[in-house]
Length: 253
Image 1: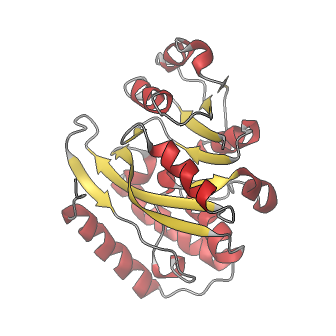
Image 2 (image 1 turned 90 degrees about the vertical axis):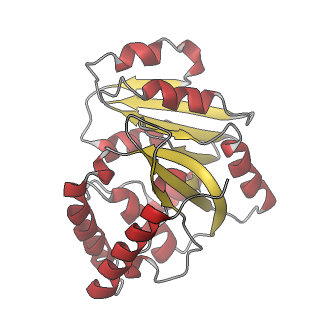
């Protein structure tokens, strides 16, 4: 089963190598690797080009932001499954994409799956900041403040064709809106696969403290746009408790 991995990058010369090497080291036999660059000026483009044809598709041009670039990647993808690995992130081992493929091969009705993630220090990858242990999706979960970690979210490509791509109306939470749309509205067949798949560096757009409130406001707006009921008190209470648990939980090695 062919998996398309999309990396979106803008001026991330410090970590782009880790991300690329993480994808190229995967043992899964059928990977399409796409990098969408927003016209970097810091040396990122030179690093990407140094990998030659190991990168299947490389685009470097101005875009309208993160989600516009992600949509460009989707439009270029030809794999059966699409996943995203941003330029601050990397897979925990070389078997992640093989595990993803196995899940879809075991269950031909499966349309999406996701797993767990750890946040690591921006400059010290050995320092775990938070451990995002997810759980099975049940209808109504997003209204209560739940969401799966998007960097671990793998979806069949035809889901984007049927139910559309990232909505640019949401500047910081379009990934969550898309998962709401796919899981809550269109009720695609999704499964949670316990286990750690991705390490995510702190410091990206979604992890900056000043953006957390804006992100949650956008999520609440997305729930409204899909006519999904919500309780603001329950929503924010879940978010706070979940964040505290992430700070103290650690993966079992």
